[in-house]
Length: 598
Image (tube, rainbow, N blue to C red; front, side, top):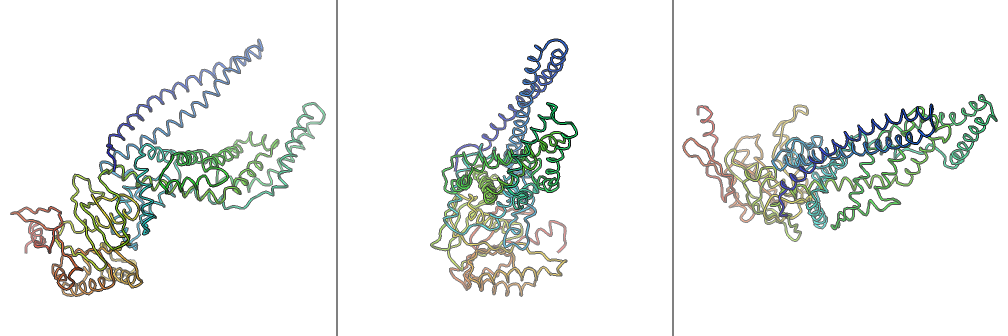
């Protein structure tokens, strides 16, 4: 997929960022010292100007200007340091991920759903999960979107291909992906931030535009006139103070309502700036794929591009935050009706962008999700994008492996299902690899339908929904036995097939909760019904008798196995899929090894 060495690229980028860290620290110390000395020069210059000679106002003003410039430069340096630290963290995470360490990424434990048709069985969420290995999102909406893609994958061929093209495009942009995530990490978004933003967006306006448009013109004019008259001695101090009550009363009447709205946006200027930067990155990336260019069009479809719109919202919010300074708030409200003026600006923004804002954040969520899948593609040059076929029901792969098993430890195997009603029975000893093989098939199928590359040298499949029953548990809270829970799962499977759903099915050791004879009869009946309903897939079992079903369903049932070789006192597994029913079992051997007398 690409010829570069991901580890080498990340290492080079990390080295550059560590060098930049030292340079930024030196800059920060320099700005702090020079700022301090410029302020020290300002104070005596003012004193000399007042006491001795007005000439000293020149160095006083110059030193103050230098001080202000240095404050601005220092703030920019601090922001660069924060972003650089986020880049270092993101690159460190990627380096760890290349070594199979994913603990730095959110595992999405909140998405675990035992009732889902495959995610729990295939370990999609939680610690050590597929989601944790994929997740490169930095927003809650991005995390939710990626989880949604894994829980409800695509089944339309063209949509899958479109997403594949986008993933392949972002896979070739490692630096861009790192910067996108780093800006998000630096923002430090919390779940409540976007919730409050949406709550504000849905709120009704506080002010009638026509009435307050007049007030915004009249009050400042009257305030400056009253102040001028007071300075010139044309009105008394009492009358001037009495006038001040008017603008303060107008503002004070709305203070509680303004404060409630302000609380939804307060102190989010930095967060909004980071959103603006990320939107600008997407707008200016120059994407070629249809999926990504479509996202860019959404960002530019309104009266303002998303980056400008969000930046404008940040500036208005910063202006409103000035009211948090009591002295500044008092002066600004007397002369400019500041709180009301800024709330009107916010309401105007709200009117213009009420429909656009959710769309913008949806684009960011999609982009983060594509970038997550792109990181998988970039880190695994040997993975391939599957071919999606719709003219026949087929799932075929060469050298398929589980993407979470390190390449040096991974044992790859073929996958082959050729038509509706085709099932492969996989037999084998304990720990021989049956369950891992089923999870390998399931995980790669979902990756294929999500638009991601798969762990195989070749892969083509019909976009059928995946249904699994690999890990059924009992429930004390609902007084539900293990066996009954499994029956409910299988009933749901049959009901879906009866409704006409085309399903790719993975079953592991079905009907475990009953005796051998009953289990054999039930398994035969279930498999016969599944074939009759047009399902296809794999069934793993210890029950070698099920292998005889190949004679009853020639062409519809195939037998495969994982063998265990016993050499003296040693048990060896090669984890390679073989044709035919398993010949060796290892339960009694393992019991003897553990000292259990038989």
